[in-house]
Image (cartoon, rainbow, N blue to C red; front, side, top):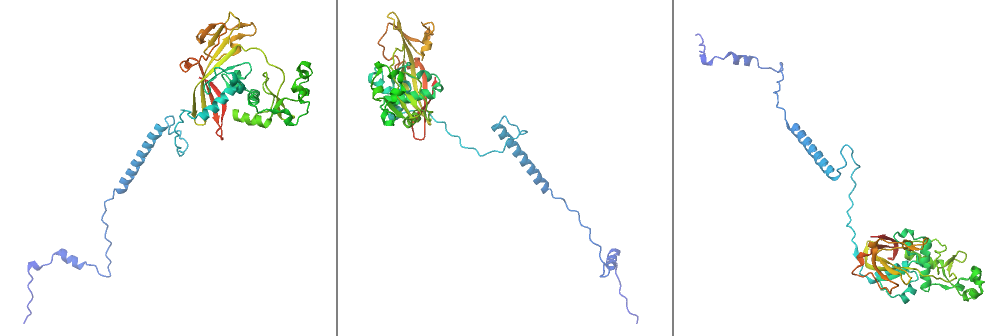
Length: 372
């Protein structure tokens, strides 16, 4: 009997594609070609980061230039300055304050008085218009004050030596010259012309009864008054001053008398004492009084500091006329004048500021004077 063949329906018929696929399936001996990679979309993150960095840098440069121009308007970026250094703290300005300590004002006044009247102790014995710490009178004939005004740089080493030695002698700091191991005829040898005159055979010539002071004492006082070390030499030759002896290292008395009348007188009025840091100031007003000793003459009071040469012409022997605006008061004849500068009118007179510097020991020494 013949075997029955299966009937294949149309639905069971394989499509050509499926058949092809099955037939062409790869075997172990036939390698499959590599699959082509699918194209990927590029990331934009690096570009965005780069733009942000550039923008930040640009803003930083702009901010720096704005700050730089504000701090140093004269400097431009094309001319860069040196690298910034750490800023130092700005110190507050030192204020000028009134001195309340009377010990300080007394010490300052003592030196102010000695600058104008080196023999201040003797002056105080007969002064009438003197008021401690505030007013005194002085004349130009026997002092160096005309070298102080208005620029104290004119005060020479010799002037300072005159002030110091005169101050020391007047304040009893000179000793008998015999204490310095000098010959017994020291003064007779030193001043032969004077001592050979029979009228001058006084104790200084016969018994060496003159006085002297050591270099060391002079240097110590000079340092206290002027803040420097002196050069030892003869002081300014003013009547009654001392002389220097380099052999025995002393300043000693001189001989001879003084005479004459100085027609110029000054009054000084202290308005205040102040300090500013290591400086001390004395504010003072000054006048000038000219007395014409002719009975028909006048006493004139000026609001300014005037020297002898400003008032009296030594060649013509005539009074030099002053600016009328400087005249404070005028009276006939020689008057018993009082203190013309007062707390009520001192601003109408010429004003000066005396400057003192403080050293490491707390001592104030005279430095200069300013006309205000």
